[in-house]
Length: 380
Image 1 (cartoon, rainbow, N blue to C red):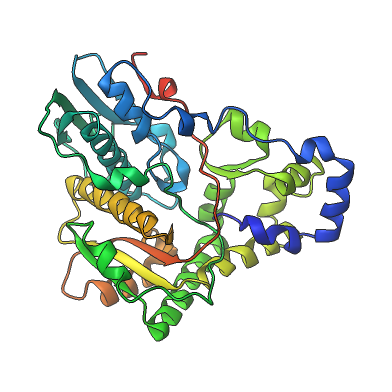
Image 2: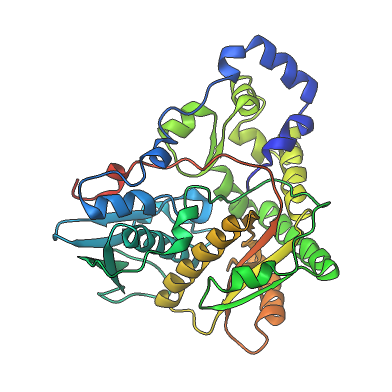
């Protein structure tokens, strides 16, 4: 769960915050010093692998866990592993969403390399895999080969502008009728979507209910809250998880008005404000898109990640905001009824609904924090 930055000021005692901001001016203006640096360092490095990886770590991934680790011991090769300390056991018990995030990483690496004259041949799970859980075996092995004939991927041009826009969308601005066609061409999976106002209203209600279940289920809600990074210092110290930075959150953190404990307290103003804010997101969707695969193996999930990244980049190219809404796809008992309902709607003939997102016109937002590349190289 991520609070809407634009609404929080009004929701958590706006007048108090404004007064505090005036008296805590130095604190209110603090920004992360190191957590955003990787966005400005993408493409740097003498080794083609380093250059591609510096882009790959900007890929979307669940809860911004950045679960990738790479080994570079063999010249011209990248071996990708999962950091098992970055899993989401409550909301993603079979590591399906984490695997999709790793697929996004590999695809952005491949795309970046294509603009650097490098062909990348990727073998998913070269030593095998377990469909129930990720483990210490390699997620993928990628071989880089200089190739003057490689075709640069045009979607890569939008990698720095890509965002997951967790803010209310403009309900006065409908999306053009050809938007779904623009997004569909970016994928190889079964792509679906709707811009129909009646269907969108139904999906707004459905995704709101899925959010309610996740938030009102103690162990799944706590998993998110444990990953809150409140204020610049926390974000710089641990730039994965769910960040809350900027003047409002610096003051909320400094004054003790927003803590992980207060957000977990369902009677607190912070909890109620957060609930209203996330509902404001689901309730302003102007369209929905999804991906369905025939199978649900680990390689299928890696391929889904590649497709999902491409849909996100295609939306960015079209000037459309994009936010995954994967709550109803989570495989824990409290969500089981909605999970079945979702599959009955979107995959009635079988298959697995891998991803669901809302689209619309949203505000410009900052990129998410990232660990530097050196923190992700096992043999650095």
